[in-house]
Image (cartoon, one colour):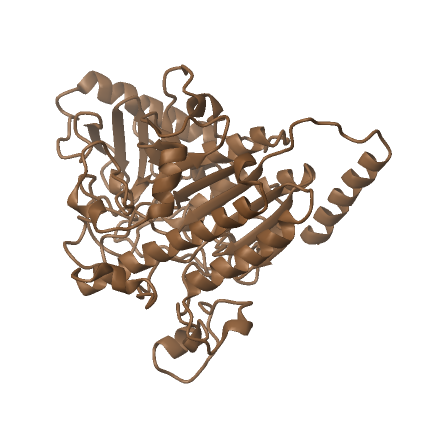
Amino acid sequence: MPRLRRVLAVLALGLSACGSAPRRDPTPLPDIVVVLVDDLGWQDLGVAAQPSPTPLHAAFLTPHVDRLVREGVRFDQAYAAAPVCTPTRVSLMTGQLPARHHVSYWTLHGGQDTSSPHPRLLPPEWRVDGLDADAPTLADRLAERGYRTIHVGKAHFGATGTAAADPATLGFEVAIAGHAAGAPGSYRGTERFMDSLRKGRPATASVWDVPGLEAWHGRDVDLTDVLAEEARRALRTALADTRPVFLHFAPYAVHTPITANPRTLPRFAGLDPIEAAYASMVASVDDALGVLLDELAAAGRLERAIVVVTSDNGGLSAVARGGIPHGHNAPLRSGKGSAYEGGLRVPCIVRWPGVARPGTRCDTPIVTMDLTATLLAAAGARSLPALDGEDLAPLLRGEPVSPSRPLLWHMPHLWGPTGPGLEPFTALREGPLKLVFFHDGSEAAPRLELYDLLADPGESRDLATERPVELARLTARLTELARAVGAQPSRRRIDAQDLPWPE
């Protein structure tokens, strides 16, 4: 039914347009390509994430992303909506904070909570099924404006057995290789992208198996390369028409299982084997970006296209990587799943000819929902309900903006691994200051940490006791905002009662 309602709505809009004078807009709507990489860390690009390069980023080779940096704007303090994947992906589609839409953790099986058990806390009654297929999305709004909407790759918007597991129910006219799971069963075509074959077992269907790519089964190909080719074909078909195009390209890389792409692996000789495999996955994503840019250029549409590259959360660092755990996003602290900067800060580059000033860096903090607001405004599309983002066009043009608004993160769940900040939390950034409220504490003395991110981006010095006035102000602000958006607090395991917000 959700899909039928969307089709009827688009048909109604088209019939209405047929009954009126044709739109005479001298400026065509921009094509839009969003590349949402999975688990790509702040340091995981060939171009430095900060003015002073570090050895971490030097291990990566990303010439196509580097080109976007030269031709667009890089946001040095860009944030994902959440430190894990599904909440951020839902936020991109809805423009809402996870605290508001209540998909506050990653989803998989319908009706099942994926939170790891905590000894003293319970998660709230969050939306374990993910995005409601009836909720209006970015793709819906762009389709209303006449866009041909295409999704290729990881979806992870809704759990198994729910309509939103299929991105075709969420406003995408073309949907390829997306389903409920947040990771692929395998990156290899020889393993049919299946979990069981990757593990050396007889072929058995699994929730992790990537759907819709049967034509590639048995072939010696890498999943990211396959998705790039599928996206190229879909984009070429769409660009042959006069309609504007929205392509949501979401590679499963660089999510686990970390698997070297044999085609790109030789570029990274001399690295730790696991890190070489990881770097080869990053390079594969970059090559895919190159394929999309070439297709836009061949159609003569690159100079009217908005191209965005970003990530759904901070880089994985607690497990599965080579090197030192929790150190892959340095100087940022920790990584995916964490309340600290390594779990939240992500790469973000926007190329928009005529709007984004080429080769500039912006240090104004932004967040995922700002991309939603920006793309809606660029397309002249209707807004989404309770939109929590702001249009980035003034920042892209280099115009003065008002003082930074507060940014709020809320994840009342325990992620599996252990490490710095990997526990239920709510956090607020306002200006250079960041307050973290860890839910596992006493009501009389809540666990609050305060950092000055400009002076201390690695969050090494907790200022909570040194700056009590600012601590009190930000604590009140965090509580005010959390209540205003309907954030669901963690619950006490002993009696299942909501934890109070800190006063």
